[in-house]
Image (cartoon, rainbow, N blue to C red; front, side, top):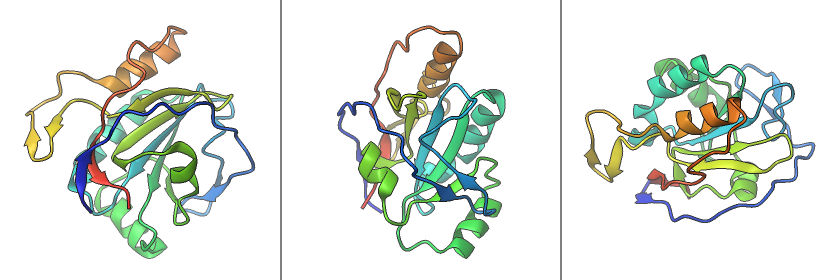
Length: 178
């Protein structure tokens, strides 16, 4: 995969449809419909992207502390097999349901450019937040020891308390979605 800084481009409401995916355990998931949760959090992920893999513990931590949201890891590599995805999820101890977007149905609807890139959708398909998890990656091959801004957490906390998300879009830095 190639890496870049994703350009900012706002996506309007996404029409939730019958779009369903089986997760790696065979459970049917509707990632565009959060059900009883406050919103859906889709984390576009590349199994061979070192930036995505570096965020695995943080994704687990955020999803574990924000259980009122429906989290999904969306694997975007169309050549990734289910067996390889299962092994990857085990190797990186991913706790979030993993969906295989082999036909890029979610990529086409939500238009992420890199992995990891996050899209948070409300019950009506409106994008509440789009962008990076945090600012740990300043640019390609330039990383902070620790994040100074926790953009995804800030957005989720605002949504959970009924407040507007202050920064609705940030630049995600990662591996280009082919």
